[in-house]
Image (cartoon, rainbow, N blue to C red; front, side, top):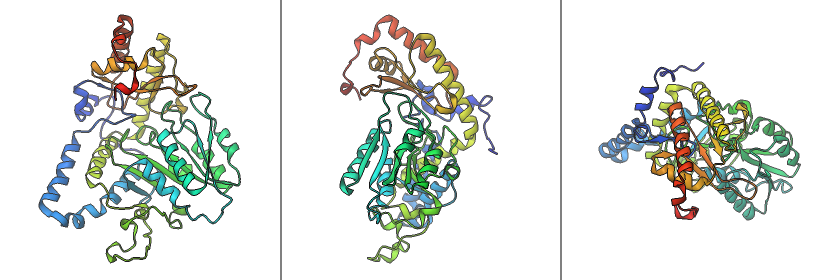
Length: 410
């Protein structure tokens, strides 16, 4: 049972004081980048101080084991165990490392990777290039413009030639929660690995990787865990971790890194999937974010998230804005995507008013959407202000003054 430092209802003012950006505007974009906690500055000063006072001895006193320490703290939010989570720099690298475990796959008949059109484009691009290099085939299931894909559609594509099912836990654009446990159960029965992009899940919905049974799970502290960039992580299922040898590797993965041996001998713990020197400052920022999440607990965060996303969907429906997110709470992650008229121009107007949300351009059958990602530190009053601002922007015609060229504004 979770132990809370804060009660979300009673202590919301104290919680908001821990996130400085909330005093400067309305921040509803934690699905893209979590708000920085005030404690992050202190954590970075720790990094500077130890470097300044100890120099190279900082590796011995703290830095060498910092990635392990951080990974073990993240494991608590994933339903994972000690030394099962490896810290890496980004999700693309995590996918490369996981896929590289099969670069010498002896079963040449297994050469197909299953993905969906709703997975994150840069991950599809990366996996496709790896597949091209390895003469594997990428089989992409078309989402046909819907908010999600029935897991049975994925399962129907898993055959004896499937090497990986590489798909998402929560789809980035619609926030649809995929039944990865059902997919993992079937894939294992067929002898295929599951490689799950979970970047939009930890920190906003409960995650229990041991129960899910997935083989590889990729995530990061950038978004809902409020840990900033350079803080991605890779979980590898304990039953297979010590058997696999990633070909994308480096000296931290060596069982005796300071022997400087020319023969690669893999360590057996979470460092087995590491590569070169980790981004030490980023690990400090990750710890600061995890401390804040831990003060509130995932149960409270999830309950409040459902409450706020329900409110967003209801207020959108009242205005006739179609939603591109699941209506059912159990299928919806932490954000809501709305098809608002002149969405990109409206988003620019909101930026001017210091109301930060996200825009995603529609592809083929999908609409342009504004994504709203409230977190535990947001309030219902901020949701009201967000919709009041949209009402004014649309009724006044203010949006017409802004660019329609998405490449014009970053």
